[in-house]
Length: 193
Image (spheres, rainbow, N blue to C red):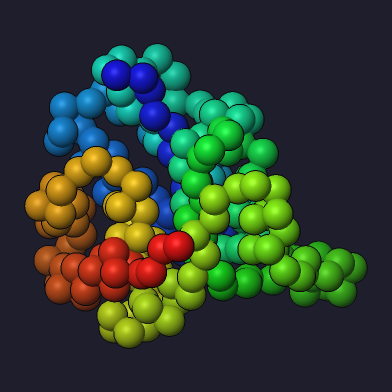
């Protein structure tokens, strides 16, 4: 099997590490060779965070270069735009529409870009963008945005619901299991054009 490349991008504190752990667990459980590389920016201060997940018959490096990502899962809209050049032709971006202001915007030295979904789409990129934060709150906790996004992303993988549920069971602490299963289901049922 050809190696598949997934990028999980966001802002520190959004749960991208749990998302990559969940995906890596699912893929290893399915028998793939999996490499996960976590690249932290200023994650403690709301900086950009990216995780690479690569899987296939044999994966030699955890790093994804520009133009190689099959899927980018973005926890925040500006992060989707920041990493768009890493997407391969015919790749897909799954993005939360939440806007988290970076330090230059907070400091007043920059403006948050407008109409990012439209701008990304205008590049001919397939982008699935939705309000994952509202769905996470509906599930019971705003911090479950990561699992909502994984639910939406699950439709772009060839694994059944049982495999995903098993990975959630193995990766999420028992006391948060019900909430995260609801978050996953809400993401899974997001309308995709």
